[in-house]
Image 1 (cartoon, one colour):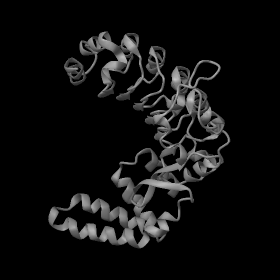
Image 2: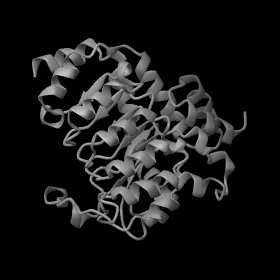
Image 3: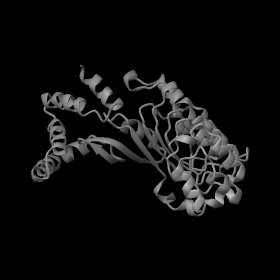
Image 4: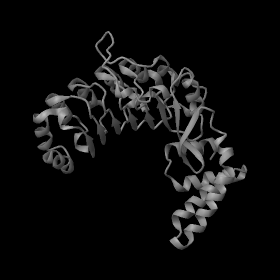
Length: 313
């Protein structure tokens, strides 16, 4: 199998140990010490406690020797949040006028499939004082320039975290079309995923204030059709927004805290196709009201654990 083909398969199947070993052999042929790291880390998972310390010392020594060269692969202004076998897998970029260029560079990393776009440093605590600024359509307005979101190529990502970056409804709409705008323009077709087969499984939009219309745009985009874990804490959502969630058919985790969806929103939530598959649901009683609490406590499609929680509220 060609080197690039193995890398693509590993992006699709990152938990395949045999594939990683085969890739490690190819790395060693090229003189890349991460091939040795793959072997050591897999050996650590197999050996008993008596031998594990020795393997861990080998790993620590190897990482210490080569960490600087591995870090040098990351563009300045990009922070590595997670690695696997020495390769960056999750990165963070602070939003600014130059962020789109940095993001494009960061996503060229061989196994980068998770991205955090952080709010500007000066806006770190602004969410504590946000007013509900609305645009001309009565939806939450952004606090940052969001037009550039439409230029991002997100086709390779499985996780996207924009928490506390107030993109508003307009930003959510730009994000929803980003893959369409970028897929045909990508110079490397091997790294491009069709909008019809979006890979994103984890989407964190806490305190993004996307509003009902912003959420509807994201839900309608095939690029986000595979989302399984969705965090929507404080997004100025109503029951109308909850109805948009029905397009996320495979949800297993959902955070709707600090959205006053009311009884109508609770009813819409219980009618969603994913209700029976939910394993985690974050909501406050004040978000749904007394009647909404009773509905959740007696909903037959919710898991017994979730019903039990709402009965205890």
